[in-house]
Image (cartoon, rainbow, N blue to C red; front, top):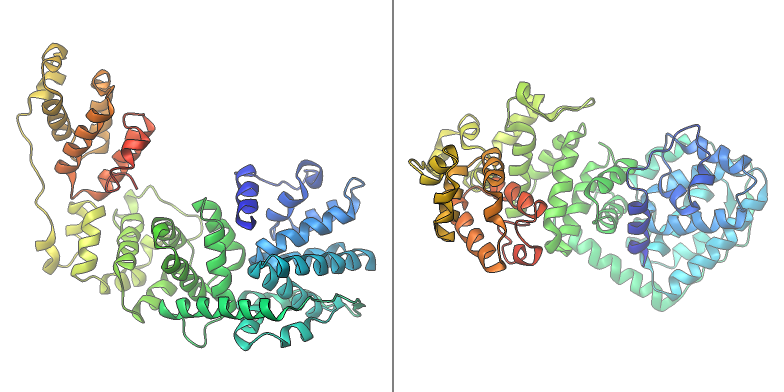
Length: 471
């Protein structure tokens, strides 16, 4: 249910931009308002809440606490908003009552992540002297590993000092429901989580709270790659990228079927200053597996494959293709296993300028197709001869004249469009031939696969039978 709410909110607000002059609370639901809360719009949101006559305080607090439970990585931002909108004790008292209610519900419904998020918010608010509650008593009842999940968060510790403490706190009787069976379940949940994190590389001095939030974040927003990276940037930076990496790898360890998504996230984060440096340092300390080799291969393809002056990828903040030190570190990882992965995705000509010579023998020979009849028919606009070809002969020659260029494929696809209204059996025949000719061209297969679906040449049900092309 929690993940479903996040998915609904993010999909409804895809591409949302909040401008200073907007009447924020009037144009967005309260849930959506808190989902899109950021450093840039924090004061605008607070001003709108304070001045709007349409915002009901009860709805405000209910929405805020709901979002805290499903977006724990933004807990400090939510605490800062509470401080900005707190004119008197009324809102704080409402907050205490709503927290008490939702903490009870999280215990009854066994929502462990929400329960820990609420305790973390109480901890931050008490630290800031917003109010006092019995959180210490509640936290004392859980074991040390659970307390670490709540307290051991570099992202919170580093930034909470930026928030001015209240001179005096409001005393409230926030009673946190304690259930011994639930506390035992929380302990087992955290124990399993910690075992997975240690398996992928977490060590004793890592911030387990940040690892926990990283894993929960990428598992919660696994429906939108770009949104996931945006939310990561709300909390993580060079100081806790190490924990972020472990959290992502923990999520991948728990749900390997979603490896493609986690790989995309790791590669995308490379455009942020300092991430690749931390990632490479982490890789030096562990044994790399096939998944990590595939991540490295796509990092090469994304950032290093094309000379900087020819790259279409640009960044106003950081350009990894210009960081010679990081590139040298990447090259130190190249062994036979990594070279094989790089060959799957990248242009062989560029690879020859990057890989060491002792890896050249791994490269497949480029196929050279000459004197293809279908090309002459296309050049001569001889469609009558094309009609006389068998389907399999046409498919084979089509794949040969378009090999291995995406642009050539699309040009010829347009030229012979009338011959690609295929039955499902014909679609399978085409894909079998297409894969046979291009089996070593992994990046090419992936790009063409997307185009075949986009232009409805191949049905999704047929594509599902060919995971090596469509993934």
